[in-house]
Image 1 (cartoon, one colour):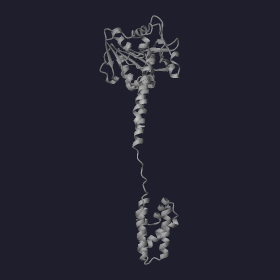
Image 2 (cartoon, one colour; image 1 turned 90 degrees about the horizontal axis):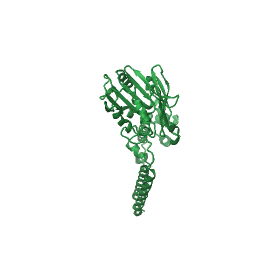
Image 3 (cartoon, helix red, strand yellow; image 1 turned 45 degrees about the horizontal axis):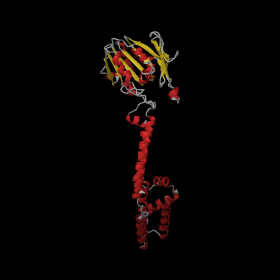
Image 4 (cartoon, helix red, strand yellow; image 1 turned 120 degrees about the vertical axis):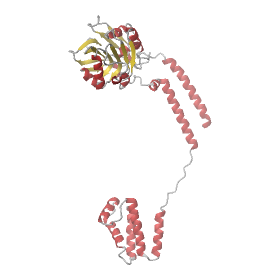
Length: 406
């Protein structure tokens, strides 16, 4: 079997290579549906176009990337104005401290634009709103039935043109919001609002619940780039610094199976790589099993160890019995019995009283009368000059019963 093993492995590897070639040719035109939200990704649901368009929309402003939490900002200054922070994330998950930091930042005359599929519970309470997800793919519907359609409201925009694309929906809408302090800016249909503005001091916070409208797929479909340009036209033109935030992107709690989770997840999402990995594991397991079978030896039968100490005690007992020294023999038998109690049942034998008898009975389930007779004999050995053969034999019998059942 061993001499054929290299040929078997070589044949399986050859079949794997052929399968990889044909499967790659068949699947290389399949749409990459990973939702990455990464500004460097040129895949359909990456943010390459949205990020690089900022340089054209704000030609007089510096465009910076932030990766730090609001309390540790080095690219933004909370005490100055004319700054804009853009947060694009599948889930916006700030804590209470971060929310207050963003609010203070806006009040000094700055802008925060948040586009997210879901707002955290803390964020909903802070902004006094409720959001509802409407991603059809979450309910197992086919990708062909999953599409997105949005529009901007008039006013403040001049028209209410709809923008759509045949890609992933992955959006939501506001079920409740405070209309006294909020301005409706956009919707996913005629009734479900998905884009609002909140005023804070000299600045504004924009909440948008369709983050895939910033994806490459949406922006490059038809005239959808106009939707993006109109939304960002709400940010003042005299803004001096535009910051693309990645802190909240990486802080999100990943629940979706299509979101980017790292290099290994990207590789494991490829069927060819998974097949190659499993084949390698199976071949390695076969090789290990083959080597184990070849080198395995017969396990020798080990004889059960004899209780030499018990045999020694019996031998010594016979010697004392032949000399008719019953009292000395009784002491030896008693000493061995007490040593047995200490080692096996962890009981102190300093006081052989009623409490000791009761404790030993509980641990051994022996009849209390039998234990009491054994202890009585041990306690009376030193007070007796001679021990009759019958009494010693009776003591030995009770000890044997104890050892068998104790």
